[in-house]
Length: 146
Image (cartoon, rainbow, N blue to C red; front, side, top):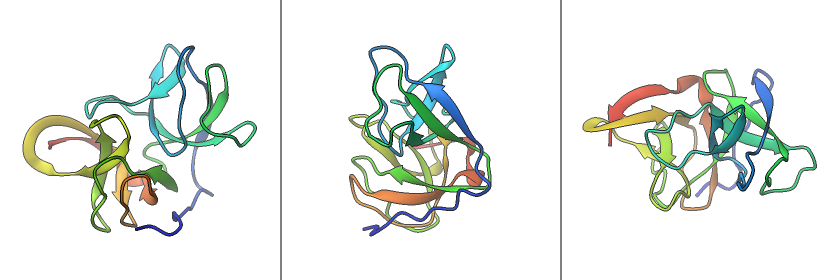
């Protein structure tokens, strides 16, 4: 269980986005672009652009029309990511969207399945459901797995 998520954001590219109408975005959640606004990724095949890391007023969840800072994938940053219903079991696991109940992220099993995955990064901590773990966003990219 992660006691405190590791962060290294000095080299992060954090871009502001508005939350799409009738949606909310939770802290540490992978998000995707939807008509120049953001929504939470809810499927392992969603094309994630980054992870929600900050709000204008510091409160979560962010509601429709709120501005959210998104740490973009592929940048040299470590950000807190919300663990979904499946645990993130080992340091070094690749991490993707947990599509079970759309509750955050999970370990990605690369190469052993046929699902299209968008790996958002590589974990530096382990975590149970609901924990925040530090994830290196520079290690993200598309792949096939389970």
